[in-house]
Image 1 (cartoon, each protein chain N blue to C red):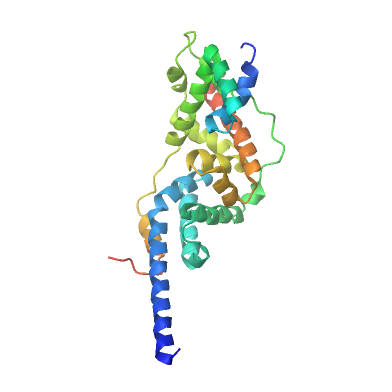
Image 2 (image 1 turned 90 degrees about the vertical axis):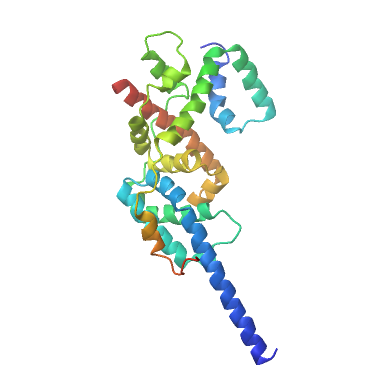
Length: 196
Length: 78
């Protein structure tokens, strides 16, 4: 290859990379609202969530070449975010492995139904016993390991496989934590509905 | 709570998640058809999942998008 040809090749490569980088940043920013919504429930407060999202984007913009185009960018960003969240001392307040045995899946319904005067009420009426605040508070009370999975799968609508990759745990663990986490959530909800 | 309800309760999450085998789905459906008690609890579970998603939804606060834009290393395309 002549010198001018290799220079032309090089400048084409640089231009291409610059274009890829612009595209990456724009696609990542397009997802910021969705990333924030998940971050908000992973973090303890709005401020914490905002900080996490900013740190995530700062890191993502630096490490953009580690992202494989065509793969799930939202999952890639959330992976950075959950790692940052853990780095920030989340490990220190890690929940113990042994949780109290949770109630079954019908527990919440049975509890809510018992607070209604009519026999055999419509499930629509039953769910009205729950307030938005109760849900937010109950979710915040679910231990981190379980909550992370609920937030990713039930709120962020990630697949089990994506959630497993984001959290760096096996898919089977995602499924078992989800199962138990939802039961813990329902238990917390039952306490709040009855207390109200 | 009748016979089979306990099994049905155990199958609820994987059923709603679409994680059961065809035979298990068939088994659950058979039970639900003749058991309004469980059927109601299954429908409640679906509503609850939706409600959890909606109730916890909080959009990005104003100003954050601009902060993220300022972190860019490239200039936005027009």
